[in-house]
Length: 115
Length: 112
Image 1 (tube, rainbow over the protein chains, first blue to last red):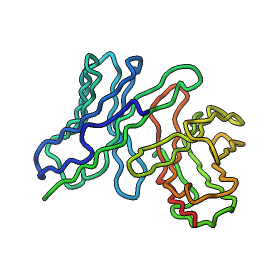
Image 2 (tube, rainbow over the protein chains, first blue to last red):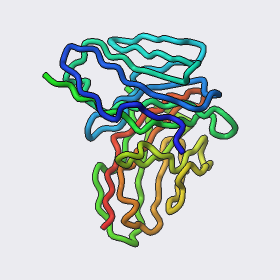
Image 3 (cartoon, rainbow over the protein chains, first blue to last red):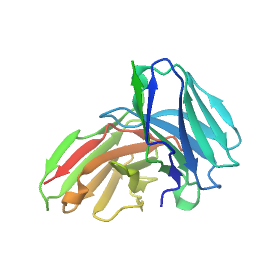
Image 4 (tube, rainbow over the protein chains, first blue to last red):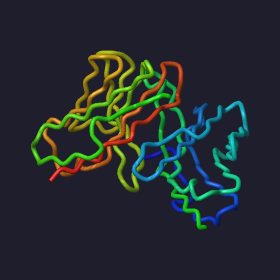
């Protein structure tokens, strides 16, 4: 089974509102987490990452929060814009043996922004 | 600007054909990956490679093989295409000491 999952498969928000996309992970040994954005017809693009020695990291309009106690990750997008409409994936590293660089991806949440 | 390119955006093949999907990266990355992406299943790892001539099976290698003769190029081969291999195929690369993967635009393969 997949160790990385999402609470909401779809999310619809009004333009200008804040969006929160959630992700649960099950591997307590994971020490790196990453969020990707995938627009229709394109490959996933890096948004932001966080290591397990942090609980919060901010980028431009995006914030990732990590709660290791409950194994939960969230992506917050401030002032959501129509260009934010996409599928968002979280991923965690495997980080052992020969798979040092590998990631496990969640199934994705589709974010729709209403004008 | 970092770049991963895939040889085709759309491909239609017949059952039983041998199919080659090519991926090239210009970032001198050591690691390269092939995924397939299906609705409701997310990204699933087919094969990966940490160096030239090296390959490792991912989660769903059955029906696929790969080739990495040069550092910048990683090829996915479907020896005898089947309809259940109709999917979006994504190639990615990363540096040896990084988890951040850079993705290509994907190839949407239809097997009829």
